[in-house]
Length: 139
Image 1 (cartoon, one colour):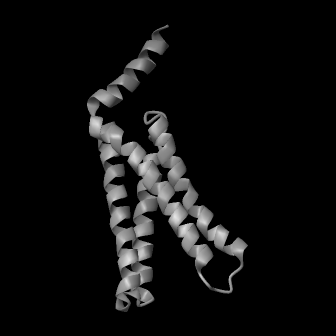
Image 2: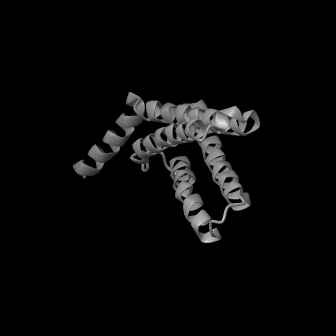
Image 3: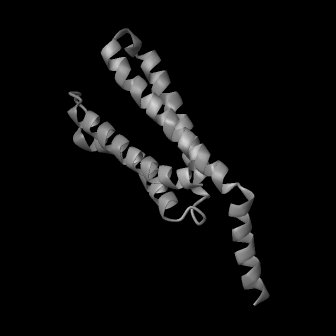
């Protein structure tokens, strides 16, 4: 429980860092795509830091975000790995190492999210929620 409460801010900071890095990489990309199109791609990732922030603030209230966060992380990992393989980035070691680092960090973030989910599903966590609702019903 104590470790999980310490990992929630770490997850939030990682998600913020990830969005910033991906946005900077999109902006610095020398393609002919307009700046606004690049921002459309970058802003999609902004939901992950927000969900992680809400989990830091009140895990009981926002625990419904966990399945969405897990699904998004899994989809992101699969897409990044598929993109790296299909664009043959694996032949350029220096580029693939950056993508590999992102995949490893995303897998670590997924492990943290699953740890938070497991912690929430403990009986003492859910009993407090049921106890609080049954006390308000009695009054």
